[in-house]
Length: 488
Image (tube, rainbow, N blue to C red; front, side):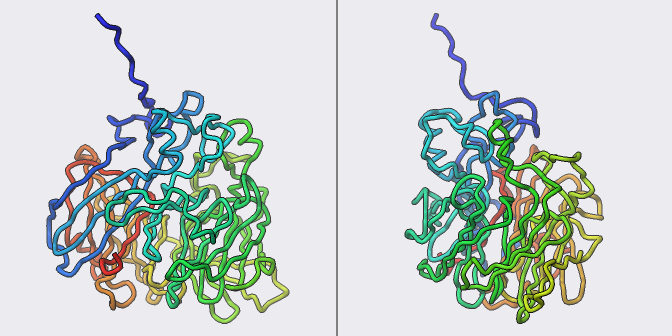
């Protein structure tokens, strides 16, 4: 009798505590590429709905070495998926993003990268390869579908098949640094894509690269600036005339990194900084304003009124990520609660070095703020927020009308979890906010089975107008992006 061989793929059993904890049985990993033609649909799809809803999120490719088993879920490899709507049909497809990192691990058939954004923990065989996972956001611009992770350049995917076309895309050499944001913006009038990269000249550096490309992907603006300290800059804001950054005390912790730990820790002794630069200007002219301690991660909307700049973001009064340690005090769940915050500065006032921060709708809590993506750089009326539901518990989608102050809400109920929503215009000429909210619902009481739901923004409370029924739980996401069919 031949000897048995033990498989090398064993994820830890502790869910929510270890990397991939619970494995396939616990629903912590997916790892399977999937294609489903003609998904089952309940309800009535809008007859003229034509386009693709793209999603991406982290998925553990292999379990970590035992000494890195406590790595965080954000370090999973990018797994992209799409729902393609056309002629009343919906097709689903998912594919791994074949990054340099993913391909190296596939070849070795084991994990080669250690802790989240910590190159000191990597296997020597991957030295010189990109650590990027492309697991945070997908975006479509100048004919390219790009997957982003803010510690590395984009990865280009085929928008029809999701196959990886370029594992290290630099906009034809226009991107000079090592990083690029997961949240670029598209100018509502010119069609330019504006983005940035922080820690762009290497681990823990204070260098930020700013880049804009036109609708053909050609560079139109490029500059560098430095930030007061190396902290997380997950998102930015762009108006018709300005660009703004929030530097929060979730700071690069080199001592922790060199000890084999995570990239960040929360340092409450550091100030929060709000930097504003005129678009097209030299980064040396950025103005920095300090203000109340906050951690904000996503921009809802932004606009300028002359030299006055306004930015709405969701955020809390302290560290919102309990998996990143606090340096000086225990993690505070109350301070972590997210609310919509409006930052404002007047660049014409040379005597003021502090920003103003107002909390809007204090009774509305949540995270992952979004807007109608056609209004990234314009004054906007409608914002969307993933938050808690006051009706029956659970997680809800909130639609906020800044003009009237009305907050509309839809929730799938306490026995289901809903992911971040994406706004889909009713048609190409629809006014702001007129269309559908689209996103994935996970049914905890149905073996974690997934649905994709469409809710009409004219009546959120009425619930889904159409539900795409999936046969099992599908790959999760961090963010998603809608692309109309005529762009494809």
